[in-house]
Length: 170
Length: 191
Image (cartoon, rainbow over all chains, first blue to last red; front, side, top):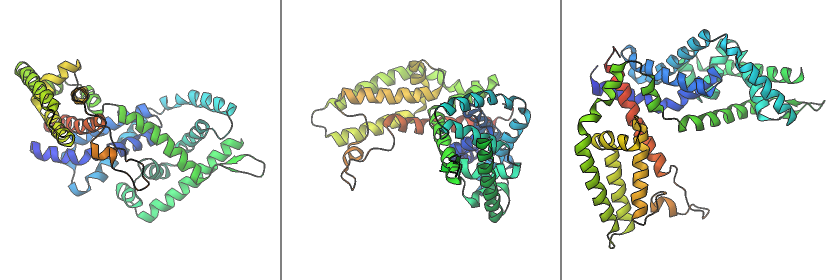
């Protein structure tokens, strides 16, 4: 691939920077880690540009790559992932003083509920709610039907609401 | 949140969406303030990669200083011309500074060393600051073009520009730097 051609193809990837960051945020549940993951995604993307078979669908290729990068990171750091628990407990304790409607409290409960979701539901939820992809784009990224996205999203939301309520009432 | 009969709050789908949205907005605010380009450069672990990126700066430094002084003096005196209309001066000024921002010689040879930083994104901000200083010196407002500031909205309130000049420069600049770094990586597989 020539330089201008490469540059043009990379230029096509840049506008999705924020969506990729949000997707990484959804998977990592930590803004600092998400920034690193976002950089990883772009570094990997430009090294693998040759493997893009359908340039018109490069956006979905990039989102799939981001999902894989996040999944690998999650696998590698499964033990470290327990780390935020301390801060979650602190946050929850602190927020209990300020009332149960506190944002931090709800955020902690949401994060643990998302983490507890089955992988397929979690991916759809993150693509739709964090990366803000349309149903169609989420379906193309995951290579599933739009209807499947909708049903998984419905189940994911219901499971999260249930988990948040259970944790609250426990 | 809704309340259950025993007065405990119940999380609804709207609550979930609201929490995600707020978390995303706060994280995005932080992300936007981070120099993505300079962080990308910092992530390149090969000396060759850095060399590729910074190489073009060195040979142009000395002649570029002369260009800078001449350009600054020209812009300053042009802006001080009493007969110049504000709108035209501002448009000309913006064109000139944006052209300078795009110029490799200007930003690589002058602004990075002047900014005292090793990354070009800082140089982008230096351009914006430099532009703002010159513009203030010429008696203008550096918070957006006249039309953007004063055009009234339907309700009568003045429209605010979406981005400040500083942000506009940063956006313009960051994309160019990131594009170049990534292109270098993509075209030099050993990096």
